[in-house]
Length: 96
Length: 116
Image (cartoon, rainbow over all chains, first blue to last red; front, side, top):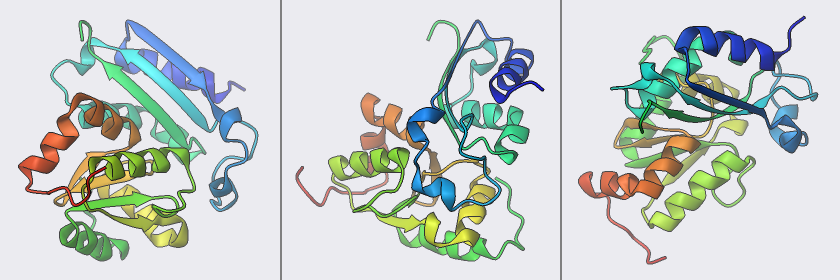
């Protein structure tokens, strides 16, 4: 079974054809979060919950910040529904 | 925005973003944030010196799910200014660093209350 990191990469690569895609699993830093216990349906306490993503894609040209983030959230909807908890985003168009 | 009106949390959300010019939905309270991302937005708002109100989504499961549906945004925190969704932690941080957040407050007539 592919892990979440691989799935996110695959989904974003196909949706945004990014020039740059840097994805980092930050879950370990958040392993003891109080809110993790209080959110039924969210991921078990073994990583793959908190990520940082930096991406440069021509698809972001002409889109504002909220629209860029929404496009990424939408592409990763299945991951958010299956326990992806936090995704820090740095989204740029080429040349920005 | 997804505005399915049958969500029971939407009425309360609409009231809070209408009544409070700067409204933050967060984990924990301004005094005791329960999440680093929420804490950072509180810090930025405090530093900006504008009055703001917070709602703790950890105390209200209906609100926690409701706010995500209301804004069509999957994560917390979420900042609203004058009833408009501004963004989460990354966007607020970026806007603060570029000066856009301060401009947004000024344009909306939200005055600083405290010198920080």
